[in-house]
Image (tube, rainbow over all chains, first blue to last red; front, side, top):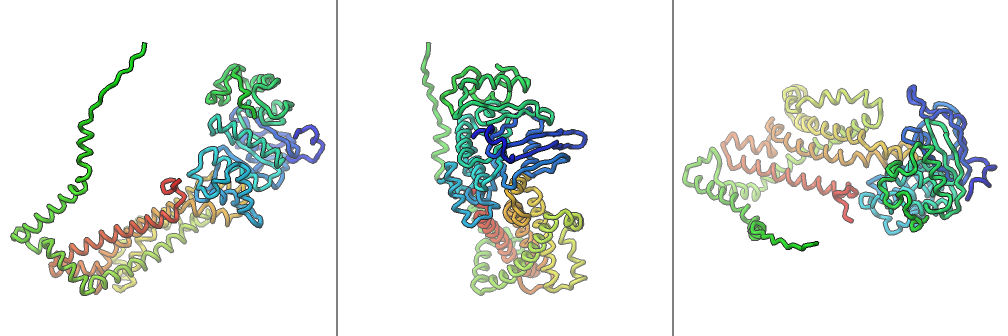
Amino acid sequence: MNAQHQINCQPAVSLRGVVRQFGENRVIDGLDLDIAPGEFVALLGASGSGKTTLLRSLAGLDAIDGGELIAPQARSAVFQEPRLMPWKRAWKNVTLGLRVNKPKERAVQALTEVGLAHRLEAFPATLSGGESQRVALARSLVREPKLMLLDEPFAALDALTRMRMHRLIIDLWQAHTPAVLLVTHDVDEAILLADRIIVLQHGRIAEELHVDLHRPRDNGQLGFNAIRTRLLALLGVEKDDPDSLGRDHNPFIAPGYPLSAFAI
Amino acid sequence: MTHTTTIKVSKPAHRLAKRWTAPDALLRLLSPLAILLIWEITSRAGLIPARVIAAPSEIGSTLWELIRSGELLRHLLVSLQRAVTGLTIGVAIGVAVALFTGLSRRGEIALDSPMQMLRTIPSLALVPLFILWFGIGEFTKVALIVMGTTFPIYLNLFAGIRNVDPKLVEAAHTLGLSRRELIWHVILPGALPSFFVGLRYSLGISWLALVFVEQINTTAGIGYLASDARDFMRTDVIVICLLIYSVLGLLIDGLIRTLERLALAWRPSFVRT
């Protein structure tokens, strides 16, 4: 699954001169972006760079104030919080709003895929953070999206759970081949997952780079650090500053620490 | 160099507490029983005259007599009917208006401020006006209970609807829910806990209102029983009425708890893993 040989197809997402502003403040300022079908794009940027605003526009939650935005109808979003309806059991959450013949079968299938076949009847209050987020992933997948929007979906999870989720998201993406737009402020996460990384600054694309590392990827891989250093420089952070970019709470991804044990 | 020091902790206080655990419940019963006993003795000795308060034994036998003759049940059923009728109408109005104002901006503009103004009027202060308007019949009594029970439901349900987590509403939008599905699957279940808070208040008020309402031209009902007993200085009957109010209050609370347990099974406090 690589972006290069799909670039000629009709893009899944196409943005031309998109503007989004709150009063005088232009959060997204004339953005052009194409995402190929099945491409995994990560959107990096400091807070306030317009990442989430862009994702919300793509999800159809906010209207844009200018430009042209084309996104598939079949799209789904996963947020930082699972946003499950607490009063619905796991499988009912998955089928919510789904218009198919046998919704339960589809829910069981999706929940099995994320490894939660045994939690079908559980109420969200009894699920752990990782489990809830997997239900949210199943809820998103069951809609067979052409575009999956992920808004820092792993940010609230502990380090080990996050690694498992990284692996899961790659498996699901390879099995279902939706285009994915992942908003994150985690540089390593972006390099581990994405075909292409876009750095957003002041509502514009500051840098765009293809990650040509072979999959499965890990942090110790040749070339990983070069990309990392470059991205950190773009984001205005020194390379050996572990406290930046939300990595401080991850004991395994401190610089120089061997990471091949946590390969994806 | 490491030392392992064992510190002996003696817990005499703890052991003492443990030894007292079993008889604790009994001890708690002892003092009320003692009070009853003293009450009985002083009544019999003539220190507390019956027109101040009747002796416990007398209250007991009167209660038994009222139950045996079926008179208590008759009054109870009349009161229950009034309370249930008033409550049903009050809750229906409260729910209908709250849905209207809670779910639509226009509804809020049209109806919320009148509701907020009406809510500040204590329903019992309306007694004279209602008597003038509707007479002293059954209608006034039920109408007063309706007035008292509508607003707790309205206020709580309205707030519940408006306080549904906007993030869930947003998630529902990304899942492609229609407005009707949004209301049914997200907003109403989200507002249900608040509805129950309102219902609890309303039930309490419906019952409380009886005390007053049933003193207006009645021939039956617990409130009538109490006011009639007052006229004849039957303190034993008055105490029985008070007991009935508190027992029914407890029963109603238990009923609501059961309803909540069934309807809100998903809440963390009720969920059993």
